[in-house]
Image 1: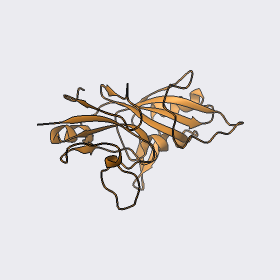
Image 2: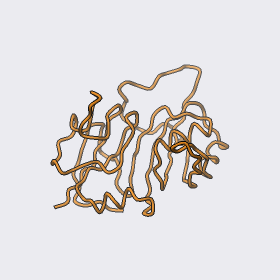
Image 3: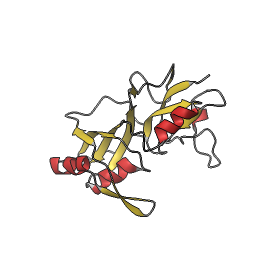
Length: 188
C-alpha cells in the first residue's frame, strides 16, 4: 500500500534518514515506515516541503525532468530587489551545473509587498541595519542542484533564506518546521 507524508523539513537538517556526518537527519524529526523515503531533496541550509513516500511511480514522475511540475519557493534575498533582477529571473539565467553552463527555463517570479508570514528560523537570519532584504516567490518547473540560490546570486541578490512552499497542488499550509501530515494520494 502506498503511503504519502508531507513534512516541513527544518533548516540545517539533511534530507535523508541516516548520516555518517553527525548532522541532524529526517529520522530525528519524523517517524515513518521503513520503506518510506524522501522524493528529491532540499539542501541542508534550505527548509520547507518535502514529500516522503514508498510510491516508486510517483518518485519517478516527480524526479524525471520530462514530467515538469511546479515547485514554489519563498526566497528571502540580500538587498532591495528591483524589477530588472526580477525580469532576469523570469526570463532565465545561465548558472553552473556540474561545471557546465545551464540556461534555466523561464519561470514565474514576483516580489512580496511585505514579508510573508513564515515561522521564525533557528538560528535567525543575520540582521544588518543598513542592508535591506526582500522576499520573492519563485515558481519553477525544473529542479537543478541549488538552482534557486544560483539564480538569485546571478541576478545580484544572494539568497538568505529558502523555503519550498509548494510542489504541484500540495503546500506547507498548516505545518510548522518539524511538522508532518499524511495524505491519501499526491494530487498534481
